[in-house]
Length: 527
Image (cartoon, rainbow, N blue to C red; front, side):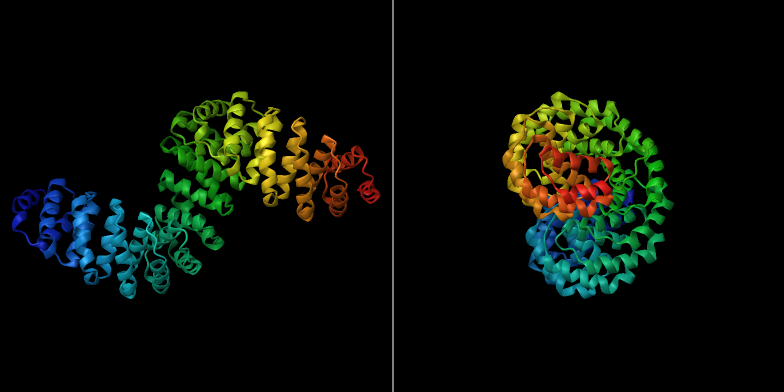
């Protein structure tokens, strides 16, 4: 091949379309990609494109894309030529031409629209690899085609028994990445087929398949159980991103596989020095989310994160801290380093990031006045984007560490009032607790509005939420007779599940506000 390259370059001007496309195909197929040869072939092809058959155009583009030689001039010229005669391209040609554009990252909306129309007509002739490569290409460049994805799903379901693991994985990745073209029927059928072939799946194929199910939020317990067993066998060959994505998938779907997470911990600890910021933060998030907190794993992740904090995005810093705080592993060195890093770029943190970072400090009991001041300033600017949980967690955090911020509490109260109909019981209770604990930031308007909203949802309040809410009204000395009457009835129903402090605080709240509920006190006495 080396000797032939030099000879071919000299004679390209005498080669016809078949010769040129066959030569580059041969080099690409054997994994040899001499730039000079591909460049000379591309230049000659551009001159003769009107003589190229559809198949030769697709082979030419596939070869250059496989070789990693984009040649934009060739892509543009080939696109123009293909558009004149898309009906001459067969299934392989259509698949190759869109795959080439996607692999190189070359967007061509007109070409992708034309290819979709032609592909739909010919889908019954598409082989599994061609179906998988085609939908992958559309997902990769972000080109929407609802009709193509729907038709491809129907065709794939009929042929799934002939799909190889890589084709199943790649196709599911495409549907998940495209998002709005999700097909439950395809995911059900593909999951069943994958389970028959799991022992032939490679690490990337396992990881991408699981990621697809998690990304579309489609639980498949039987598949995830079977995939866990296969992943455990192969964990020593998983790359860092594959381990990270696999754990993230199980955590996202709340599929707790202790054996998988135990096996992954040992493997991850060995490889943390090769992990990037996203991998590290995703791994600890996954363990924290499923409620598994192995100290050695979190410690190794924290140590590695400290070395690489300047490469962490704001979101990754907040996830890292949230995960360690949730796991109950404070790691003061990490907190201090993360605080310094966050202070440099607080304007990069979104509502979730701000809420997570202050919640982490408060949960661990780590005071950082400078960080809380900076977070308050940034939170006030972004409060209209805060979700109910983020509002509640943020004010809870300031109250918990005793950090005053009148401006933040006032602004948060106004924002919460507007969104109270979307607050869950835990969020209402936690927020009111925060305002009561902070004391001097009491907002009568918030307590009035929150009381009205709480009464609509009282049957969904848990004992701690009832107790904390009533405690908040009593602590600020704000009577709400209607709420207290309604809450008494709900408390009586649940008294057998109340903890001692919850009974104590509930009774204290009624007594403090001189709200006499004989039924409540009678029921509580027996309990």
